[in-house]
Amino acid sequence: IEDVMAAAHPLLRVTGLQKSYNVPVLSDFNFELQPGEVHALVGSNGAGKSTFARILSGLTIRDGGDIQFNGQPHSPISKREAEQAGVIMVLQELNVISTLSVAENIFLNRLPQRGGFIRTATLHTNCREALARVGLGELDPETPAGTLGVGHQQPVEIAGALSQNCRLLILDEPTAALTDPEIEKLFENIRRLQADGVGVIYISHRMDEIQRIASRITVLRDGRHIATHKAKETSPAELVR
Image (cartoon, rainbow, N blue to C red; front, side, top):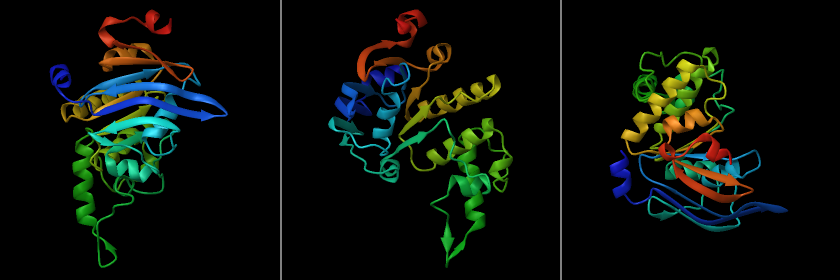
């Protein structure tokens, strides 16, 4: 995967990104992501990580700077517009609707219909394909999402992201509520995405996990790019420093 990344054009290139809320939150921030790369973003609370993610996801409008995604200018003004471009964010607070089925959650705004009626067989077939991509092929599409634990709700949400032709997946503190086996499952899913050329921005403060899953690590402090290191060539102590 690293050889492919080295030869490829960046999937995402961010230069001079600016955002202020009375005070600067992002100042001349630069970032790059290759296809199939997991690039971790670290920094203390208030460093600007979530603001950056929200700008990419269409939830916040930047004040300045340039974003190129898939070779095209990227300036989404809504979450839906970002998703149509292939940028999906899975938040720490999952957006699963507990009263709906797994299938309805995955295809919430894209339910297959004919004559005003939902085509249930098509929905379930599409759902099984989406679940298989995240290793949940055995899960019944009709299962109420609210009966699932977080370890299953999160991959259901990721399955929904992938069903929308996801090219960039942003994970914000994705392991905060997961057990160790569930974290392993998440990492398996991330590696599947890498093999498909999906780029992943992984926001976390858990250094041991980051060094296991990420190719590169970028440090943000006070809204500024401080350093980018290869994960294998740096230590937690160096990142903290």
